[in-house]
Length: 552
Image (cartoon, rainbow, N blue to C red; front, side, top):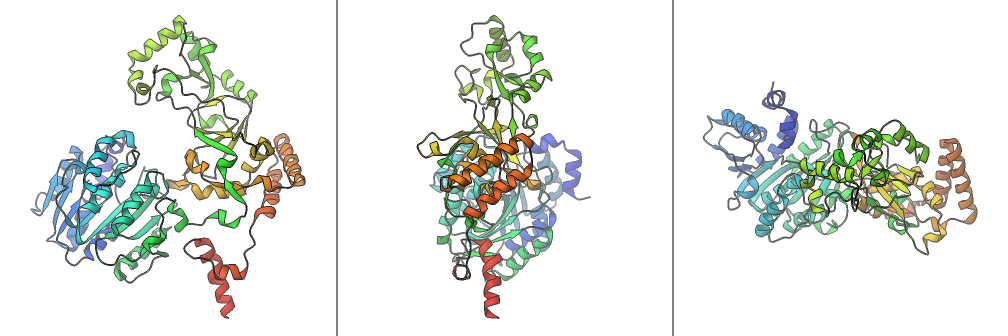
């Protein structure tokens, strides 16, 4: 049994999650080590998130005389690693936070699987100050720790040196990732980005997809390669690239000037479904998406009927609310569905004690203060701490996480929702006045809508996908105002039948109407001159086959 498996077996999952300890598989560690070893001048190596030193162990098997420095903040794993490397005088381990140390030293090689933590699980503000003071570059306040590790490592790379990082792919398509990508382009160090999208997780118990970044501080900075890795057998593509550097090519090749840090980079390496349709507008043309109510302490604020009776909280201090995704099964949530939740003593309310003079409400507020609910991350920012965010009931909800495509729900019960769903509010404008909400919702139920929205998704492990409010607001949708009156009537009739019968064929027929009206017919001439980098799907699935046919 290897060191990582032994450690995992003896260490509680809670402890490993606290320190974001998700170990790199040996085949990937081998490839990342080989990238560093491709630098013939490699003598000094930094491993910023050392763990049990899988990268250092791999490097030392292939080149014994390397001088390696490692950092870790968990005393448990540090002690285990110290025992492993105690005989090697060239390995220096430090029980210190990498982000606050080591800024002045530079290295021939840096290799890392940094910690992945939510930004409020560490002192993000102070670490950002530290990074910005050295890099002279301003970053988003939500910038994740794993990317800050990467940015610091770039700063510490010697001329001719190389970096290999394995990190979540999230930054490629998130708002905070814009400035990270901008810094990568500014420093001209990114050589190859491998986007790993296995059907299984890369890391045990880690709900995220991964990317491997190979960087170099050399003169070969005229192109950036991007390659999709969709199975373990595809890992040989990484090996091939490393062995052929700097002459090899990846799946997609770009000049640095062709990559825009301000857009989601998914468009550079994955199918963009919106390219298949004409007359598109931003989703924000017709609706605005905001997140649901965040209480900061759901256990305290959420109520079921029995809890309300126990604490004698009157109805006027209980906000009707959907609290869990599992309580919404179909595409319509009705008053009857909500009443069933109450009758079955499910979570169905939020405590709202603001401006109340009720004695029992006051006692419940004191109970919260005794339990220090008022000192939690979100509650301590509110005045009073027990007040709720102002979110009127949204007529449409949209799921945050999904596997089968984004899901929209019609909130016919007219109740509020927690962050398990986002709120969708139709836009009040002259343009929208011509688009009934039933037409909008009918569109949202179709596969064509899901296809286009999927261009802006965020990806996690095991096929799980996530949408933040701005991912949806910035997504494209078909411009429903282009539909004829006859088409609108047909869609609304089919939608009405679907509501009554739940017959999925009705939605499929709506989907067909929309595809016939908005799908782009791609001609051979258009395909011949289509920009390969801008549309991977067209380039791979249409252009090359057609050109081959034309040549024969």
